[in-house]
Image (cartoon, rainbow, N blue to C red):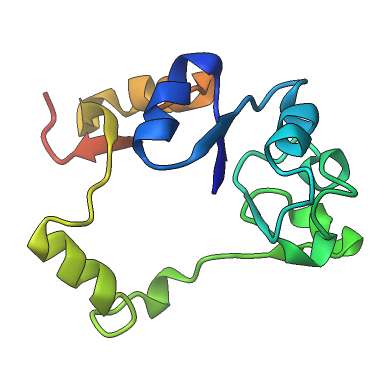
Length: 139
């Protein structure tokens, strides 16, 4: 597995068991260096014309994107979530792992609901390592 992140987060990726590669301008070259024979599949969570940037490294029909809705026209799989389908049955394995403590989610920062504007600004600034948590508390 290859993960992309800023250089500051490469040790974190390695701790997760991934080969680290940069995600900026150097990403295509770093991915090719890490996987000279190509990549079986990719998940795009950042967009930025990912499908074109990895052309020749991974077939477009082996890329799933959750952010680049136009990528479907290039052959990528565009995934969209349907929150109405999230039930104990559909996410049972994840719930079991969470209960056992084997599934964890890294939290970048937590904000009370009254500071939702700060959470949004933090999200828009990018470079998060983990999720943002907004609690019901107002302060």
